Amino acid sequence: MSTASLESMPKRTFRRVYSVIVGFFWYYSPFNKLRKMKFYSDEEVVDKVLDGYSVSRYGDGELRIISNTPSDFYQKNDKKLGQELFNVAHSDDTKTIICFPKPLSSLKGLNMSAKLFWISNSFWYKKWWRKCIDLNKTYGNTQITRPYIDYRNKSGAKERYVNLSRIWDDKKVCIIEGEMTHLGEGNDLFADVKDIKRIIAPAKNAYDAFDEILKKALRVNNDYTFLIALGPTATILSHELARHGRIAFDAGHVDIEYEWMTSGAKKKKAIAGKAVNEKKV
Image 1 (tube, rainbow, N blue to C red):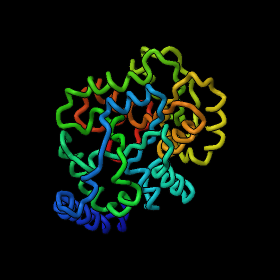
Image 2 (cartoon, helix red, strand yellow):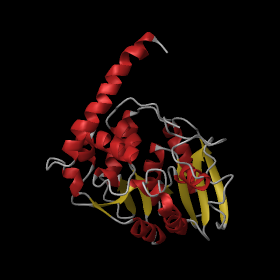
Image 3 (tube, rainbow, N blue to C red):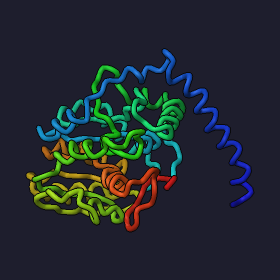
Image 4 (cartoon, rainbow, N blue to C red):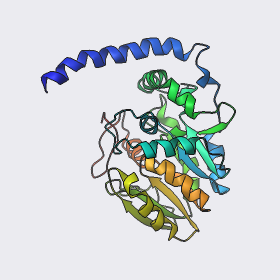
């Protein structure tokens, strides 16, 4: 470890402690308007997908790009992508469900690690979350694709997967993913799918190949449901496919979470042969 890294450690530690302590009081204060957000239940979101809606999700990675905050995720900061993410968040497209993290509004049911993360995140990025969120709208929960690891009581994860699987069971699906993602491979997550096609995109900076990925997707028959695991690019792509009359679900970590659930993992960990877009694994 370099001297510069060692010198920065106290600063990072102070920032974490500060954001949790001050963030806790801010989170539960009247100043936190995010707690007034309205959300569909996960069951309602899946019902809407079955009725022909697409799903675009926003998490901390997307917000970092919108706010032009340096990150170590698989997508470099890109001003055009940031603007598109912001525009989609405010889109009035009636066939796209926009999802934001429900922990911005309520920490109910989460384990302590997840609570501390969202208290800190919502505090540091409150200005940007508020720029993206309209308190008059109802949103889906971004965490719909994280049914396991962040929950205090993990016994409900199987039921949450039963709900999610309604999106793909007995359906034809086209998976759009990075070349190291391998969504559903090596497990039975998609055991009841009728047919699977795959479009393989770059593992890093997929947004650079957005136009090519979209062209390939639009060549797929329109009776296929798209499951997209492609970071912030998936947020934009799901919305764009909806504009072309397709059904697309921004699937995020749904496969990695399934791996953690079936292995009984107590914390985030690496999965052999699959990209895990988490710093602490």
